[in-house]
Structures are given as C-alpha cells and as structure tokens.
Length: 138
Image 1 (spheres, helix red, strand yellow):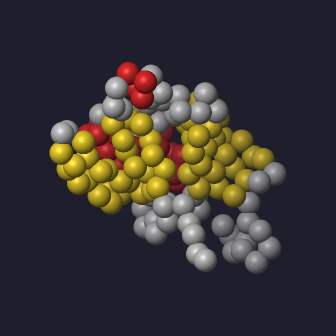
Image 2: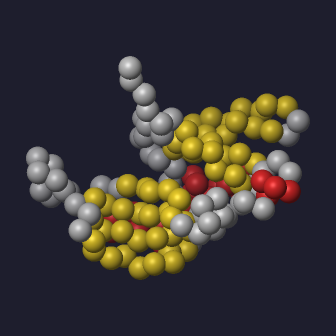
C-alpha cells in the first residue's frame, strides 16, 4: 500500500487575502480554486514545483472556526517549509514583508527561522543539513 499526506487544511479569514499572501510572500503556486457554491471554494496552494502536499485554504465557517484562525496549534510551530537555499528564501520573504519572530539559527538538523503567516500561525523555514550521500554543496 502506498500513502502520502496530500493536503493540510488551514483555516483563514478570506480566500483572496490568503491566496495573495501565499502566492506573493511565500512564492507558492495556486493549484486549484474551484467554487463550491454558497460562497465556499476549494482553494489549494503548494510550494513551487511541489508534487507532494499542499494547503487547503478553508475560510472559517462560524465563530468556533473563526476563533481558531492564526492559532490552530496553541502557538506552537504548525508547518515546516523546507528549502534548498535558506539565505535566498529568507531574504525574499523578508523583502515581501513576511514577519519573522525568531532570527535564523544553526541547529544540529540545519538552518532554521520561525515566521508567521498572514493569520499568525507559526512556521519554520528550514534548510536541513546535508546527510551522507547528499550533495555536499547543498
């Protein structure tokens, strides 16, 4: 049996505002934007050239979901955006106005910095250390 994680649902206040943030500030690609009726849409964004998982941007439906916008994990880092060039992506994201709440640091597993998305959810931008067999210039 083959399985993989395809989508993670992210509760947002507004579809278009979220699409703008993810496509401009994070350089994600809009994979799908399908009207479902009643003002709902199926909106999927993915990192550039990603063939794996993506985010389903789900507009909050009611006060209980709206209360979770930006705090889906109680303030912990929620999502991990892996890059092959930390310096490039960090600089681009800072220039695009992304708010980093922890400065870049070197850890045993690689270079990492914590940023917040447009709603306040925390993410790690991370470039893992090369492992044996990986390209040593990565």
